Length: 379
Image (cartoon, rainbow, N blue to C red; front, side):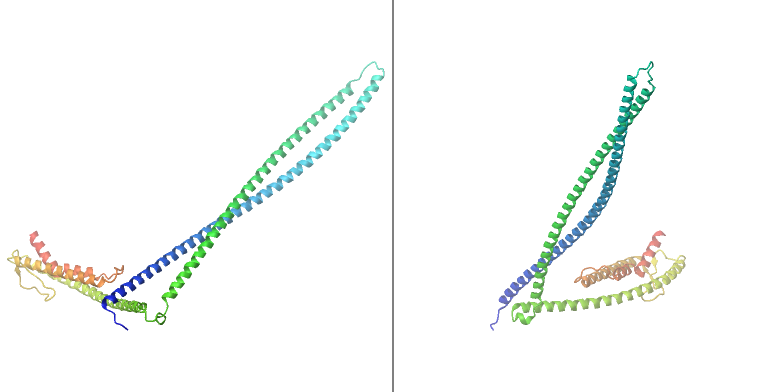
């Protein structure tokens, strides 16, 4: 096997890297397309459920209206049958009355003819008046019967118009239901197309997974095996880095607990020394040369008062302490950035760094110095 130079190895590595990037981009695009297909399929399912619910509501409304229309039609048919029966009864009764009246009129005419043929000195018109009254009453009853018959006919016509309107509404409802059925059919076709696209995407994804999960023995001594080895090595390094990061986080948590304990101890010492400093300041009020010299207490070495120093040297000491605090703050900030550099900021980041900075910024020595300077200025 011939040896390859560094340039050829680099060139092949970059070519393989490019092929790997292309495969990764193709895989990502396929995953994106699968995600889009799944989202379209979910949208189609939502649309189908919405259309099914709407179709069910429309069908329920249609069934309800159909039941109401059938009930109204049956009621109208019963009323029409009742009116027809009443009309037939009234017509028969009127026909009988007319026949009776005609018979009575003929009889009266015959009686009148016989009376006219007889010679009578006086004519009796009372019976004729009664007949005339009976005829007029019969005519008025016939006119009222005709009016009732016309009213019944008009009512039947109005009911027929209402029935036609109901039939028209039923036709419109049928047309609306047909449109809904067409929409559901189109939605089902879109769903089938989305399912087909999803099946194709799943097949392509399975093919890519099968190609990605092939063992190294099937790849032989190709460069892809080396790339896979590099990837596995990088994965192992990443796992080791994560383990190291977890260990460092545990150490930081323990350090944070220690810092909190030290802060509590410092607070207790500060409260005790604050009482001692107040007592010492009250004693200094009557001592000579108080305005020209200051008492500095070092809580880290000895809680008893030390020898005083001039104000100028004390200001220089303040400046030195502030510089030391600033350097320590920068070192701690840089160390925190180095610890958090490989990983993005986490919401549960330990909060011990601000406490340490505040402790360094406002240490007991610095607070006592500032307190004495403020006291002298007020004097």
